[in-house]
Image (tube, rainbow, N blue to C red; front, side):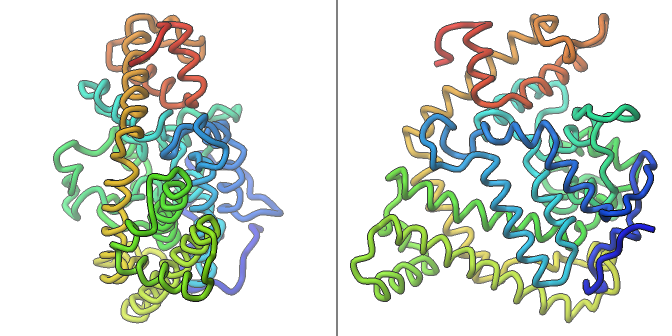
Length: 398
């Protein structure tokens, strides 16, 4: 019999009642289905590569800045904290948090922009959709199937990390109304019916908002460390102004490094408490009896209050001005973007120069070649991409 976890809320996802995996496997006597998903992500090649993929600052710019891996681990911790308090399935929330950025390209969003531009004729590139390609196609660890053969609940949560993709009528909604549903998502939903019209389950909602909380906190921390942010700039945000004033009132003369740590710690705590308060109220109003009731709700149950949502927007605006669009950061990212574009064009012209596992079959069309090249480049670490550029093209990408 599958292992059962007691004491969860009635609307939590239940691993004993999972919609299952695409390929049937024997149940584990020691782990739930969601624990197995978590472990498969943790042991994947894509997860290990996150340690040398850019978050904001390049990997070689300092040992203390976040990488995509440390960001992922912080998201996981916050997702578990929210899930534990709301009595959700922590293991599913952790699996989703650990997997949500597996599809990120080297050099962060700069690499994503480059690949999206180069793939414009072939369906584009989106790191969320690429995470699904990683866990369903590109990981090759098992003799019977490609991918990690994750449960429906984990696949569904990854597909809807940013919310519903269609209306109830099945037509693409939001940004997907312009660009269409990513092909990998459409194919998976056709095969497994991912309810693209609905919100994801509660654990996926916890992982998604944990992503926002972690982003704000650690980008403030890294921005302060890099000297791109000041406490004066942060005090433009009323929420942060109150926290900063209280820190220096409580600890006169506190050094800036400790003050920065205290600020991010309090910001994370305030955001989690806000989310939990809102979730409890919405759950009380909705009275869901299952995770599917949460999916079918008219709005997410795990969300910021209006006041915290406004603070979130204000924090992102400060970070955009001071950090993301800092001239030095933009210069480095522009160079990285050009490096990825040059690599893409090189391997499109010379696909047989890729490692054997990535070479397309003879005679296939340009779209298949492009997707193979895109998959190869998206899986690269910053360091490997730079080394491949030096080896194949030489010189600077600038």
